[in-house]
Length: 433
Ligand code: NDP
Image (cartoon, rainbow, N blue to C red; front, side, top):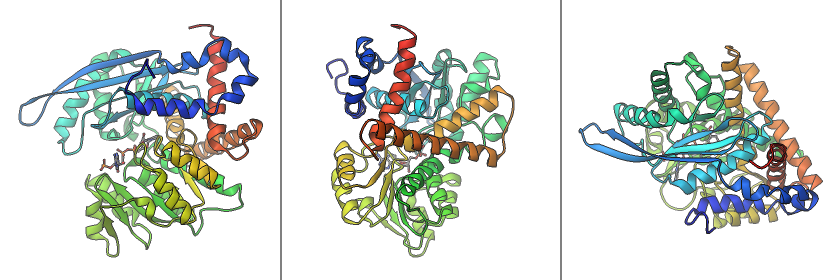
């Protein structure tokens, strides 16, 4: 705490992992002797930089850019960039720290990192976003590369931003290095299924958890929060598996659509028009926008928080349990507060933590890197089958690890321990570095 003052989200993420590790350290004293815990908390490298750009009125603006290269024991640093006004070092470090274990769980050769800026793309013109991205990359390019550090999208960074970033990287370096960024457009090195992967993966994870109780999503009420990349494709896969998705949200409120949401309309509003959830309600009879209270008050069987950190509180968890929720799978990173996680686990609700449940996105990014390295592009069906295989693998490895460490059915312990041991073993193999 003293080394990292004020970084509350980072402290929360570290505590959550460390709370699972007691039995692992007792069984593996070599981790303690080699100071793996102390080393794993300290990023290998942190870069903080000025991002100057000019807005449409000609005014000079300054934002702060970050890249935290957290751990490269298993492969090049890998993790998204977040553009949101709330971004500061504590958020980037929490996300980077989580990313180490998530990436290990995928079984693919990727280390952990994260970055971003306090830039707010909402309400900015295309030209402003482009100039910002170009300025951001003008510093970032010297730190990244196919074998070094491979950024991608996150909140506020989608295909448009990745395009501007990649264009500037290509221009500065004079290299068409496809593997330097993932989440690219399909005509210039992107992978089919990457857009869908995080949301699809989270729902597949929920389906696997329900499967352990001989249940499924079919005919279930499903609540999704957020209305961005993860939320939209979580809703799509939940519908494909027979669920009735009844909610989504943005920072202005949440929508309840008891008939089951109209996904085409939602995509039109969010992906094409870059509109707000109120634009959906204006065009959808029967849907209502609620701007007070919590989305988790709406009775549901399966809850998929897909917006942002700490959006599902203890009071929300209480309400979900009172309403008979069966499963919660985190599409977002750390959306459930620690108190809410304890309450859900104590109530016997199936709980899939983000580092396992939302790992489908980064896993498919690693598949994008494989395609780039082999100058190939795979079909949607093949890529989706790889994603499904990876999600089943993550689910089963969490379950088996939880069992091994005497916490049967506890996916939090399973994910933390399975991810940690893989990274720790590699760090020990490399000596003290
Ligand atoms: P997007 O920017 O596409 O969407 C974010 C959504 O969450 C928007 O609807 C946004 O609403 C809402 N939101 C953001 N902050 C808040 C807030 N403070 N209160 C209420 N709503 C909020 O981001 P993604 O869908 O890509 O990311 C969502 C989450 O999933 C994040 O936690 C991210 O780290 C995680 N994730 C994403 C992956 C990916 O592949 N994209 C991979 C793994 C995890 P508004 O527009 O009003 O801000």
